[in-house]
Length: 570
Image (cartoon, rainbow, N blue to C red; front, side):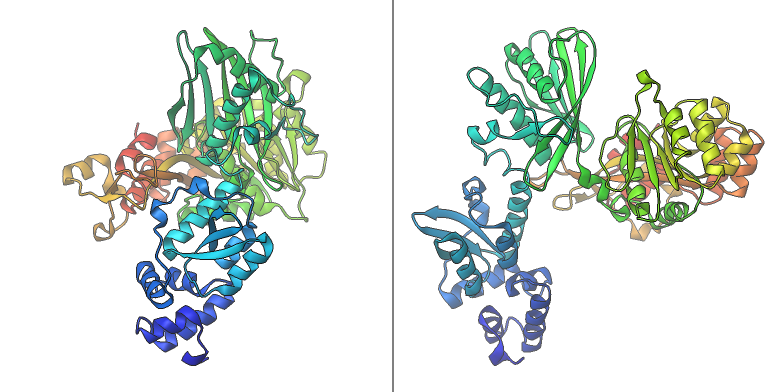
């Protein structure tokens, strides 16, 4: 391919000496291989700045440059252009006037893309030139929002009323039909809150009644914040609506109840909510836990394990027998760590069974059991039944008592891989907790393979985080001397806050203490040692505790010292 064979924008960039011929040819071939437009590839590969590319295109082809930063994305016409076409041609519909559709593009010479959009919509298409980096962000935002029904701003009252909502069963939703009269505003309000929680990545929704007020809070990145204060007069109707959606008994307000909601956002995507009601002094407080199946399929590299920690976990998963224990407080990410491991193990050659209270995320190919203590199906009974069904891998939601612990350990000693959780604060405390339950020290030392203690810390926003220098006395007091990373490689940052994040943070990352049960640690267990002795031995053998792991995330620029203190400092 020579410069004469280059087309459109690539040829113009060579002519204006923005790119040399060889680079333009190579970029054109690479863009074709990756099914991208030339403009998209050139900017992503940092061959040319987005603003410079846009100026060249504007001057060369007489297209005025439009600023996407000033555009109201609520005006984007929904369901007009197929999402595959938007991704394929790196083009986003902006608005429709009569039979004309105005489409944002970074390369106005991509006529085949405009023609295909024209053919599929039946509308005459006009190209609107925009900067490639802004277009990429706009397309990503549009596609993610469209996957959850277009987000809040794009939904009118009829669409909110018609959201497909039912219980967590696989049967057809049994919603209470078309809401009418006085109930329609309540239905719309509840649906808006649920959608907003999904859109913002919240993990929990709290509906809380008080004597003279009512508030709704979302837990985002581990922190609660208020999002709405509906009139207190609506408290009973809001709780009734939520109980109808989750198939609870709306006439019973004196005892706690559990339920489940399934909200279908598109033909291919649905979100489950685990619902619990609690009678309080001024009415029923209802909390919804958002269960997104995609969180269980992130992959181990996305969880935040350091290389040495990941290797220990993966080696333990590769063993045919033994016990892997994950520990930490509620909301520390234990379920995601366990499900990530189960996804790695989930192959047609293995029989995997889990006992959970309750099952949070459905996993295809894994036999999942909800425990029901009231009818005699507790963790211990489920585990006994599993062992009669030729299992390879067993997951027990939580080891709560001696009976469950003894059965789990017996399974780990007889050729099964067992995964489970305990509510303790660190890996050494997990071992002493098992001793205090009454499990013989020999059984602990010979069955437990790896213990993972974990917390979730908020990630610093990459768009606005600001470098910070800490005084030497602060570094010493906080324990940075335990971090085995040269000081000249430290990258300390503090949160700022911008339009892309929440108070300087965006997303969360795991902080882990991963301890393999070595001969030295086994010896201390057999001698009945306490958690302090076990922690000292683990440190001598090179296993970082939670505090050191958190500080390592700080010096790597992943999180802030304030956040490390919030999740790990005693």
